[in-house]
Length: 156
Image 1 (cartoon, rainbow, N blue to C red):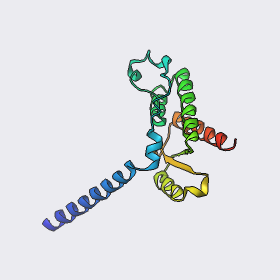
Image 2: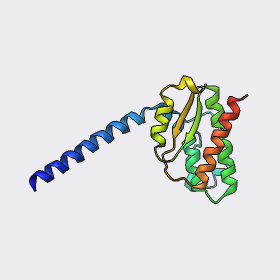
Image 3: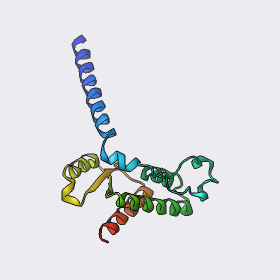
Image 4: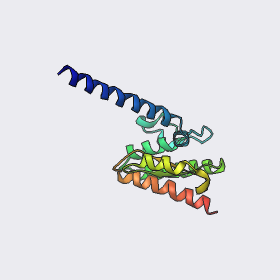
């Protein structure tokens, strides 16, 4: 019995160490950097200041746009504002020669890692896993808007 407990603890310890290494690696990735990059020079969105729950959110990064869009999943007006801001951010990233493509689903993290290994093969496209195996309609729409804007800017 003691041996079984020791073996179990050994495997748990290995899993924790492996997960920590993966988290540390992903924290410093180009995907995270671009997904969370805050463009401080964007004007505040006045229409959102009436909502206490998001009043302090600057809406200056793609991840913030995603959060707010999902939070206001039933408010088409707010979603429109957020989606417009997301396209602004994609344009700013494009000006910096960063092209983002959002993906999700099973193994999307591994797919993004694989696609990003040689960014010279795909117009410098950075694939970003948004980390959800199942996505809401809002997340799917958000991804579609971001990806379409990226493609539009690349085809200019």
